[in-house]
Length: 472
Image 1 (cartoon, helix red, strand yellow):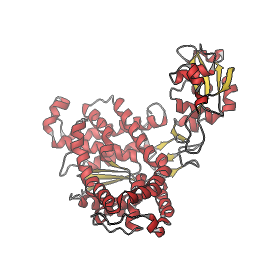
Image 2 (cartoon, rainbow, N blue to C red):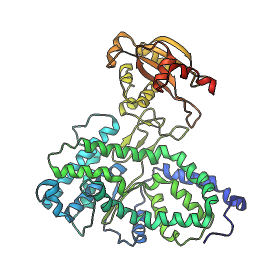
Image 3 (cartoon, rainbow, N blue to C red):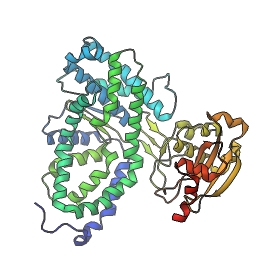
Image 4 (tube, rainbow, N blue to C red):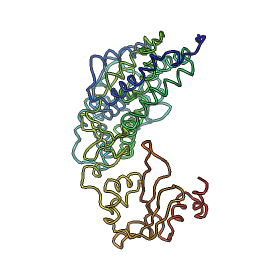
């Protein structure tokens, strides 16, 4: 039932006074480097399954990183599904696959997924040596896939089958029985005014402080690693290839745990601070406990895999992942990611001597190229690259900023497929810290006017771009 009077912070100043401390508590949880508390995670995970009227699985696995959890969990799910669906073997592989072949394919699939995944995140070639994380992923996947009572798992790397096999089970174990029910009950009991006020003060604040460093960064890195592993799945066995393809569906079985601290920060405020008494909290408390005592988790009806938190995390004053001399975020099994003020960059940009001007100018990703120039320093980059200024003028699109057009030296003229100049400009949008990012962008060499070069990037006539300042 809706309350006769919507909840308001105006009526509860004692609650509002605790918002900042509550937000900071959950930010600290997201940034914590403590390992998973295994006894408490076992209890929380068992509670999540029981909340969904599911029997907690016997196979429970703890690993050191979210990447290992994603690879091990999805490959194990693929093994379970193939065991339960022998009639699909012929369509997938042209023959019936034996139990021995299934087990034998786990190791090579984990190895390839880890090798390619780590190389992708580092911006390096696939290594010949086996990464330290490979054995951990193989052992975890093998344990989770130990032959016992089975159930549906990741299906043939197709959306419909994977959804039915993993997402449905995961939603039943978490979202349907806990998250969604609690959210609906909370909204009904507190009304939009409470939701909006607490959203702004807890979830939004926590999200802004942790998203770049935990939530989005981990998910993006895992997605890229598993996607590229699939693209590079030149495996000797079609079963191995099948398992590697399963890894791209990791997100259907995944919850970020402590990385996703924003949502439990919001819901738990009402439970612990506002004193809201809802029967749903009895089930949802297991979700809260899992977010406090461990990081990413992969859930399946017959097993679950939980990752430790990162062992180190470094951020800039805006809480964007950033480190100038090493990985911005690292885990205990060797997985790491390198960031420059919130942008993921190749390892050698951070840990090496920096890139040469030629390497910087040939980087296809404009954001990474900007980071590389920024790391060298703009004042140092122009002379180091041998750039000769052609023209400079105020930027009509960014009052108070300048744009400058430069010629490449003869030694760098063959960097691009066609003759080019470099336009140094400032981004029109303002960052969270109030600054604007500066870019060095290749433009066709026929440009002699910085305004015309900038206008082309926005696909507009130079005369129209020149008039922008008059409209601001």
